Length: 454
Image (cartoon, rainbow, N blue to C red; front, side):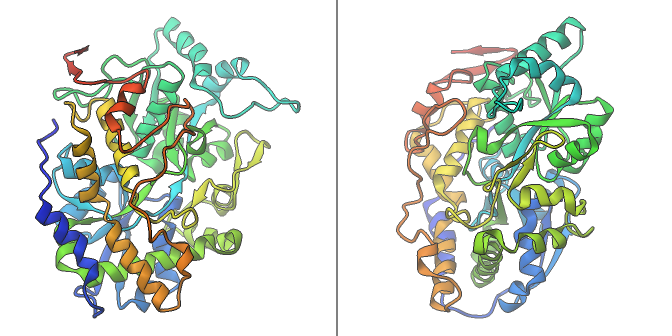
């Protein structure tokens, strides 16, 4: 159940001002940072392997975590000083959905990086509903409307249609829901008393840890999933599934993972956080520089068992700007993994607002909130002041060009109109946006029992 959230102006100001302290040694030199085995943990691996952490006076240990809940708990209880974290986790914890803790971020790890994959059985049922190009290949983007024949077939056989996502407040959950709803399929609601997210659902979504996705699909427990790489390309390599949509198709260029930190750790360790942000900016720059010229080396690094531990051939697809949809159907997707360009690391408050709108849309935020509330929560979690201060220091040190950073940004992107459903998103008017979406809660609606009321 969502708890009442009141932003403390004093607390926000204190956290936001920490990066403005004069240069000095890190207060905490030894850091343990958590991550999940996904390609977008790459900035952490590169900052470690290229010595950027040590350049900043930090001695970092990187530890893979079993799942997103374990990772978040590690940050909250202090076993981890920070982590490669889902954007939605930082926001959800701060407002009290699930575990309550004020989690903040001064750094976005990446943009994009996810896809939705279906089993071969489902793909066979979908394919006749998808138009083909001159070469006989399916035309992308593929609408979830093409999933309807599969849903009907499963229903006629008395089978539930199950799909996996990685965490209730993950980008993957919201992207999968967005794709389904854009195709006229209801993915279900959450309520104060029912946190399955399956109230009124035509497709039953449930949590599966990312590395387990292919095996769970192969076993038939789920018929599809939305996950980050390399676990979609792994399904293609295993011959068990077909990716049908990437997040570039669904709602592109939005914060994916972030560096998640406790707010009190940021307050107490301003120089440490500044140093950490500097190191990660340098790693992100390296990953994208010279038109991704370093990506092959990055693939070799993150393929190691202590990082992602997937086959380099599988990792190479998305990391080097291509994506394989079916065996042999390899297409250029140069922006599938973005680590620095397009101001990828800047914590746009508008991205935070989008996540909050999706939480409200599907009932994780159980009651309507004001537009001001959305802005205040975004301000309290996405700390652009720290990022810009770290970036400015890199420019001053001759380690980055000034035009690589959005120093004049107010934290809000322009109105986005490139989602798969064509619905414009204006972060300054979140309630109007929520009300414009055909499927989902609107206005003061509540989910009571198994019904939407209001």
